[in-house]
Length: 185
Ligand SMILES: CSCCC(=O)/C(O)=C/O
Ligand SMILES: [Fe+2]
Ligand code: NI
Image: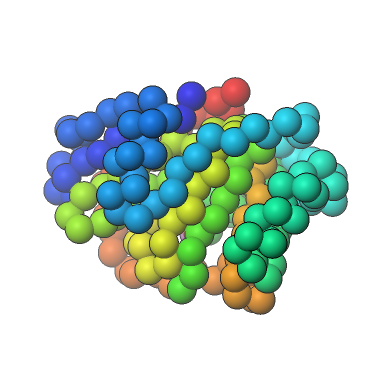
């Protein structure tokens, strides 16, 4: 089940808000310009499936999102717990950064932890299969797939270069909870 926790950015031990209700999560995130929707990831995909398999299975959803939003690039992050590069892949997103475009991700299997840092608050979102999240450009955040990652996410980019992260150099991400779970579905 997806879950949102909201903290003050100087109080990582004390969440001010906790909910796994989809409408609660969408309402709270809308206040900071984030879209959160639960879709239907209808095609069975296993973490570790190839990008080609994922793209083929979700072609209709991908084409609709591209047509509606003008995305220029689509890719897939698909990782199973036994991936030999998992520690390196996890590290890539663990520190606070932002993007110069919206971050649009559709989880079609497994789970991961997005944490957003906005106006003195920290929004920790466990995203699971079926969740679509769109984070506005410039929002500082980090993402933890956990020590035994297990998820598949389709990523949509408006820039032709795909994923480009701008790191802020802060240590805030190290003060907030990491993702200790693997699979959530
Ligand atoms: C959930 S997809 C992998 C993480 C990612 O693309 C990103 O931008 C994290 O901040
Ligand atoms: Fe990101
Ligand atoms: Ni990022």
